[in-house]
Image (tube, rainbow, N blue to C red; front, side, top):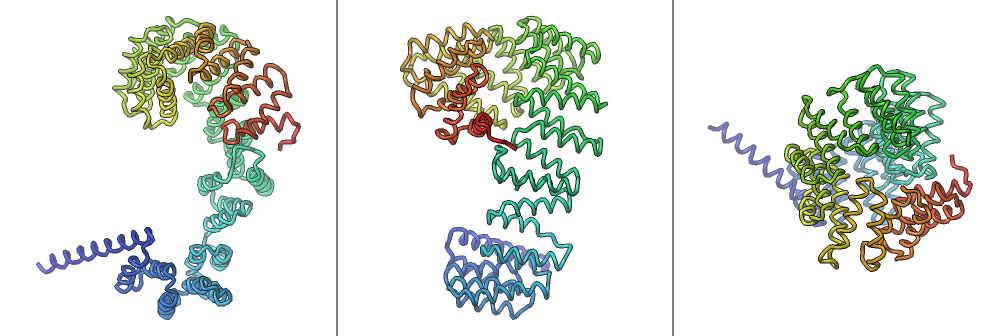
Length: 591
């Protein structure tokens, strides 16, 4: 019985202690330092060896300007043990707060000298300096400790301090020192250095890091430097340079092709097809893994399609793959890509539907089944078979509710309903997708929802919105001429409607697809003339610059429009790319 009572008493005491500690911390966080000090004082008296309570109590006294009380507490702790000599920092800081800088410095020197006598307190001294924003002294403490104790590693703390001091070169060098000691620090180095980098290769910090890495690579070649250079080049969208670095890594160990596949995929997504093609061809030359082969060959096929290679050549490439690898679960992605090619490139949706239905007869898992059904529904929307498409989308959404495939299906239900003019149902689906685990789906859902909401207020019958939705459907179905004509109804008849700029912009993009570049130019200029604060103005200016550069061969106007993005729209998502192209056209030397 006595044991039970003792256990109960101990548990109760621990619970009360935890509650007091939590309450004191809450008071401290809220700036109620007197209340916090009264609790920390009791905790300190009951647990005099708990440095956390002592340090918080000292902080409270400092913040309350109770300097004499803080001084007495610190002196008492210093007399107890040499292990408390880190408190000389707090003692010095109390005098600094009272503008007695010379006295403060004497105590700071005592704290640093204490490290010579006992290197084990070096971290506490460094942290005390750091907590009191005495960054130069903190650096001295950490560095001295590492000199006295070679096994100590405070590079992370040192790098953080350099970052706080805005001493970026030394910060980078310290993270690189960590990597040189142990390659396991590469992810941490990327994480912290990344916040100081830009996607602009001409950014000063980017240039600094590149030079530091190249120097280390020359002096002491190792995979880490190539990997970090590759990572840096990826931040800057310099995919070929990233590929060169990862190729150097692969040649050293002939083990992992995944970094090169990652670069190839990112380059493909960003339409850098030549780099992507080079990467995947290199992968094919160096792999014996069938799954990797299939992935590389599929991407190469997609690059062929995006590069406007003759469709008969692409058809032959598909058939050669099927002949080599067959049509089963292992070639699922290639079969789906072939159906996509038939529907959206060759204009053979019936054959595409037939191919997709054959795939559904294979022994697929739920995710593969959902993927194929979604593709089948896409083709059905392409052929105006909305009801059947919605059935397939709904099946996928119901079976994979919490998976990205299911969330994509829900978005396509909303999109198809929008195409049909059923805006209320579309919005009911889009509202659910605002919190999608996929940021891309969430953003698409938000954009479509805003389009419907913003353009319904002054148009109760939603005539203009319905016209615009019809044009988007025609664009989806590759009926570009009909889409252009449908948008012209808005441009001609609804000049005061809020959708006018959207209609002009979409029509301009369609004019580019149909190679009617002068009409595209006219539309972009019309958007810019509407109002300078419109959300699409910077899009129009950037698109106009690209049009002048790539299609109309007017370098002067291209340069002028890139410059306009730089100086008039500094928050534009096109800023970095506009700056790069502006400098190149102006003739600046870019490293």
